[in-house]
Amino acid sequence: MGQAMSGLTQYDVEELIAASGNKFTQDEIETLYSRFRILDRSSKGYISSEELLSIPELSINPLTRRLERLFDSVNFKEFVEILAPFSARASHEDKVRFIFTVYDMDGDGAVSREDLELILRQLAGTSFSDEQVKEAVQQALQEAGRADAGELTLPDFEKALKTADLSAMKVDIPHSF
Image (tube, rainbow, N blue to C red; front, side, top):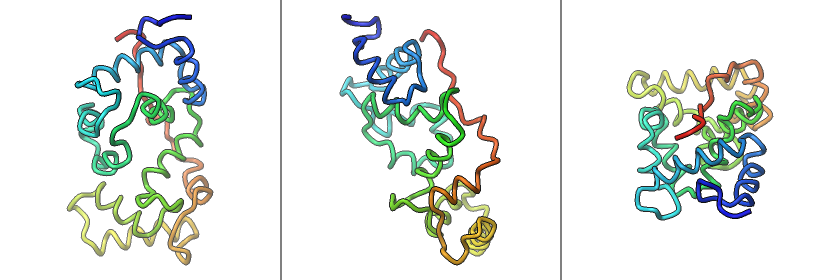
């Protein structure tokens, strides 16, 4: 169909909509692409963690270091996939899976006691002592019924967050940029 106004072909847009799990519309994909191109200051075709963290909402996030490691050198398709759980069309399960990925610090498919301690330290900064961090993690594992296992699997995580209000976990995409 030729080039869309954003520089993406219709085929590209359709692939990206599918990659997002149909969480974004064509207009939203084109708007995201415009934003991506602005973030990709040297037109490399990917965004470095430094460029990604130029987004004010990310730069002030207490999990900035974790996000840097997860999202360093992302291309546009990966950028769309990262943002998909923040779409208004994303399900509660999509959001929980994303949070699980962030909390699974070592990428082993489980959120271990150590993963939880690292996350809590990043979230709390110096306001919690080591003892308080360990106590909070132990309590969280006990409440999830996983104190003996010392880790949470995705189903455990989904169960623990089943009633959590994740409605604030969204990104607003303007119609034009």
